[in-house]
Length: 329
Figure 1 (cartoon, helix red, strand yellow):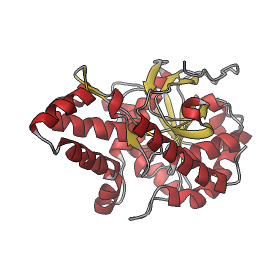
Figure 2 (cartoon, helix red, strand yellow; figure 1 turned 45 degrees about the horizontal axis):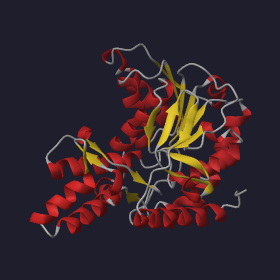
Figure 3 (tube, rainbow, N blue to C red; figure 1 turned 180 degrees about the vertical axis):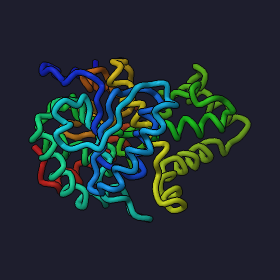
Figure 4 (spheres, helix red, strand yellow; figure 1 turned 45 degrees about the vertical axis):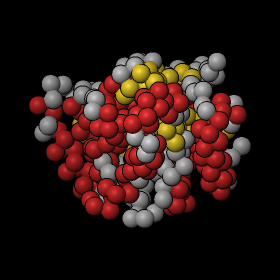
């Protein structure tokens, strides 16, 4: 049975969202948020005040077309006092050829200052982290803020899973919405697809591949190559356009919807393990039930022996990096 996280403290009500970071990812998220009508007030904070003003003005001009009455404002950390959610997209950008884990030292210092300002203003909502390396920085945020683990969530492998479903859908000539298969682990190089529990149109993915192998002995090699393309998609996009934004912006909006609308759905966010998969005191991407109070519980998937070995290696990779921050228990 999955472990249930304690949710004794009352979280801040409402739908106000404070977005930190007015760069490509933050504004892609903001645009998705407005068009889906997920908030009644979006306050944006960024060190570049002129850019923030311009983004707020531009977003405000899209509100009349959204079908929703939403206030978009230039924010300050005082906005965190009554915010239902803080979504942190701030930090230095990933360089071409740089892994997400290489980013950790540069972004931990930035988060220390941001999180001190957030908590100094009495924030008690749900904190969603998008900045890479997201699993590590979600752990860092949990430690720096002192919030319950149920209220601190990372974007995890939600986007990776969407990319994987998209590619599997193209391969099997079916809509991604009919593909159900998670990518779990680190949001990065050590992540893995859980082939053993996947389905396509209700048919076990494992069975479909076994049937395909009768006609195409190279099917497993093709699936492995497809996964590598999925895993490395961000590197290819960053090389071509400098960043990824639309996919992660939509992923953050999906997580926000699950929380603010109390959906009780499973999304593969970065959540704290408390004994699941024989690991604890680490944030990592795994299916997690989300509701209005954040994390209800982590779902522990039944993994094959090979999948468990890969997940274990991914968790150990993250633990080494987390321990380098000096914030571990």
